[in-house]
Image 1 (cartoon, rainbow, N blue to C red):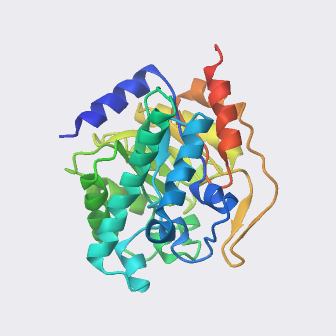
Image 2 (tube, one colour):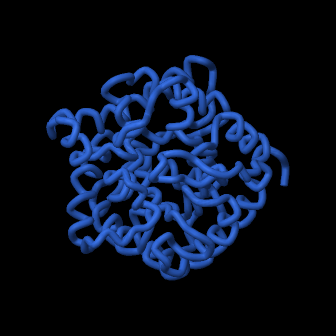
Amino acid sequence: MVSSSSSALAEALAAQVVVLDGGLSNQLEAAGHDLSDALWSARLLAERPEAVVEAHLAYFRAGADMATTASYQATFEGFARRGIGRAEAGRLLVLSVELAREAVRRARGEGIGRPLWVAASAGPYGAMLADGSEYRGRYGLSVAELERFHRPRLEVLAGAAPDVLALETVPDTDEAAALLRAVRGLGVPAWLSYTVDGDRTRAGQPLEEAFALVADADEVIAVGVNCCAPEDAYHAIETAARVTGKPVVVYPNSGESWDAGARAWDGHPTFAAEAAGSWRDAGARLIGGCCRVGPGTIASIARTLSRPR
């Protein structure tokens, strides 16, 4: 049993493309905030919540229909390392959804009348480790252990009533299986997006195999990829649509690569907003950007998708 927001969002995906936001961290950094610690943007939930609202609002103003919360790296374990107890960590997780809802309210006040949605981000186990292992997977944990890690945080996020849970940057099929078990019975729909390298997950499994896990999961209303090279998006969209029959979600990085040791980005952007049209035609229904993709590119995506086919 899922909430009415599930039906509303599912109906929207059947009729239109939903424009996602871009990277929350790069928008916060562009506003002058230092994110150079293990909690990344989640640190600002406690220290600068107004900055999070403003970052969400920048994307709504650019044409995004969805705000993705600052909870990607927000976990009970990660907060505990900073001396933040379980009750306060739970409050901050709920706050991440409330801040996105506040951005929706302000967007309405500015005259933005199109449907706006909130996705509660749940990053992979590797995001909590903050060592780049979300780009490798294979943590040495069982599916049951990963489920026990994810379920408490997902329960809290679901209790805050987002429109959808974003199970994102999933590097391998073990973690996908754990997440699919962890979202059962929460009453909130989810999307699941892998991070990929070519035609395989980051851990090396074929995408056909990875997407097949999700095909019969009723809680999952969309499946796809994020935090990958833009060049890998089209094949993944085609594969996800063919294997699952579900709407596809796609939001690649800028095309630069993350050096976890140096905590810096290398390379040059290759993201072309014009590709959003071909992604839509291949089956994508939620389209945006991930790391290093800012409001300007999201505005270009929104314009591209508004043109007649």
